[in-house]
Length: 204
Length: 204
DNA sequence: TAGTGAATCGAACGATCGGTCTACTTTTTG
DNA sequence: CAAAAAGTAGACCGATCGTTCGATTCACTA
Image (tube, rainbow over all chains, first blue to last red; front, side, top):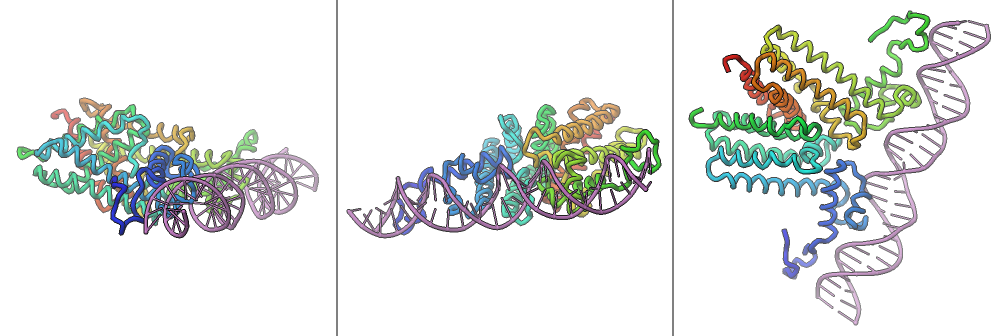
């Protein structure tokens, strides 16, 4: 994502400056929309990003474009995290899944955790025509496909349904963790995740 | 909830008229806040309820009071539904839980389903000081206690954690059903619910 | 029947929303 | 060095937000 400042002359107009207003806008919008919700004012984002009003509309066309781009970037980052966590589990699909959920389990412990940013945005953005909904749905579908692939590789008898089960445990645990963290939903989910994974054993 | 119009003279000033502005406001706010989200304008609620602006502020003090009251009423109604569903299951705690989840499973199939109204409101209302958050948390805790009680009666080895598990499956399935109903989350959740319940069998 | 409180309409409040625009400064580039 | 592009500052727009309030109508009851 970071390009050298010296680029082909045929691409000069589009060469991204390092840490320009665009990046600052994305960073500020990312933090504020998650912490305060999707209804933060444009003014608050501009102040936090220390960027002129005009820059927002030149780069993103409006608030809608900005928050959609924020979610797209969050999606990329999150999926990279998933891929790394799976890879850390080695070759056995069951161990890969365990490795993934070990990472997921720690997320709600972070200070300022407010639930899954995608679920939150999906529920908060009332307008069904908002382009962010497509980004969110696509992200969730890729995650489900990822889970389903591992389950299939592990020999689970119904990888499609089991993928939905794991997805459902993730979203459910995130929602509970956001409002009632004292119920320790991650631990409760972990036991069920293990049940689902264990159904994929050749012996099962 | 429906009182006769002829009441004790000592209570005349507080006698609720049948289908007055208060009821119409609650009904309209209930439908609109669920369908359009908690950010519907006061004007839209007033128009739908066919009620004067002033009446809202006289009865509920403001939008905050109105939506809080709406959630409180929804909580009562929902818990009545749970109690009935459990009772329909008879005496065996496991059958009572199965009866409850059989009812819950059908809810997302209703047209216009948009997820759990409590989870949605909790995630949508950005202000952590909003009184609705307390109503929501209290409702969810009562539901969890209900589940835990049945699990304990069924002899589950860890009814507290299992209660969180069931709660988590409910919220997770609701969230997935709201945005991606084609993944049939209710069916996926059902299998896990059965696993949790079966852990409560004396044989297990 | 006179009185009283509730419900009504509708104007208006200040604040904030997202978005547009002009003018000036900085940076980059040919 | 000069021109062009990008960024900044800030006023301004119409719309909408939740809220307040005066004035009027209506139903019930004492």
